[in-house]
Image (cartoon, rainbow, N blue to C red; front, side, top):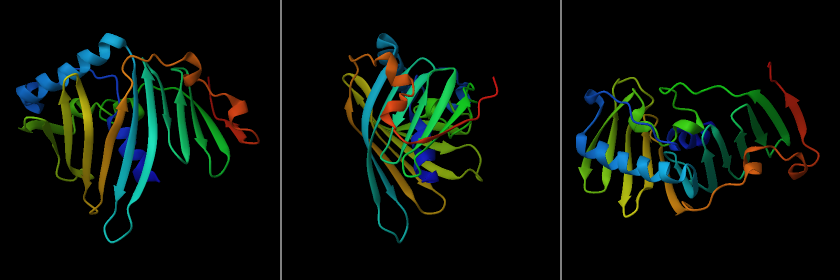
Length: 212
């Protein structure tokens, strides 16, 4: 499950531009800026996706999920976990254990891979450089040889600009793939998407770890 969470926290949204040129391929950057501008037009994102985890010499794991984001608020729904933030607090719902942890919200470090708000920000991550390898494929390579992931490929769509899929290769031989099954660009998420509704999780133990 840790690898599942890390992969999903690798790429989703709102996109920001701010790389120095040593990290960028101008053609790839232009495509990614187009995606960013498309998202900024609406101010929110909502993706449904299919995640594939393909470990070496073991059966693959396939899960469907959904992701919403508006500003610093986000929600990531998976089969076994739900992650919610309203920009003040963060909730982690473990459905298998029927437990909920509440934490204070913290702005993510741009270089931190494992955070929902960095999921589509790999091109801003200082750990990676990137280049256009085909008309719709962008390759990401780590700057350091000791990084856990040695390659990632993002497939993009041009009309409208969007992300179609992402694949990541790990040094342990695993491959992870996220395929966007639908983009709900024109549908603004309701405010309650970014709050924990306790009645949705009856009988769950809640542990409040907030300091503020």
